[in-house]
Length: 329
Image (tube, rainbow, N blue to C red; front, side, top):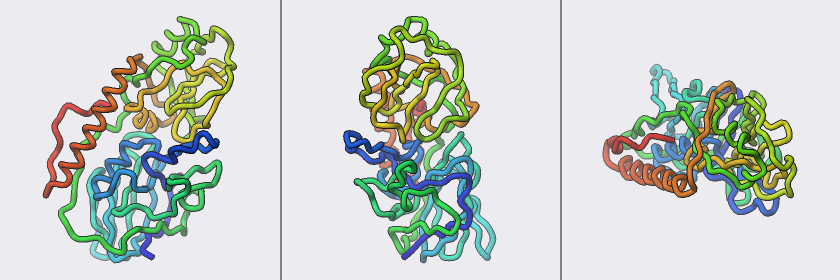
């Protein structure tokens, strides 16, 4: 079997796919998947995959890998690559594909835009799917490499023994910095908060807490005022839901979120901004702005149009950058 052998894993690396384990929340199974689905989808398109293919999500700094295949094609988004061989080294920019060969060593550098970066391989990382997804969910030990983080000595299975030679692709530049403001739709339990509480949510420069993880981002700042207490009958948790527990400090729920919860949810992050939110490292500052459901849906449609355009552009010989003006995420 063709693999990428792990010589060093970095702080944390997980096999993930862009969309996670859809359709099982009613059985108590979280969705999981990439924190920053946008970056993983871009990396997959650059190497010629469907955007559902499994790749590697890394935190802070990427792994060191050795190619155990006749050839493979890889691309990183959110970090640069160095490919080392007996002939020297090649430095590969974020968003660019490169064909690598047996025995070469791949070093993925520090994440550039925040917390996470992604590595895609042509054909995908060929771990066995669990409930329709290859995404790793650490708390239950499912998906990915036996439900565990990637470790030194592991071998990432590849779907292909070799890949064809072709012109390499370069994705257009994507802004991976923290957005100035994250768009939110108020509710579904915004009536459980006072008007002052809503003003606090929308008027504060929040700080990402070190207690954040793939389940949710905890925010530090002033307490949000409840109007009717902080316990509700548990209901379903949507991606990006902002729960406010008894201490008044909001928690933005991400890929590994629980399926139900009993704290009121003051607002929900628009899906178009959730990938950028997943990149925020501890200490980052963030503000929210309220938008309507219609505006949130329009922004998501615009993002999906960007992907359609990127897919068609990357399929052209040599490629070309898409139209400018579609970069707010």
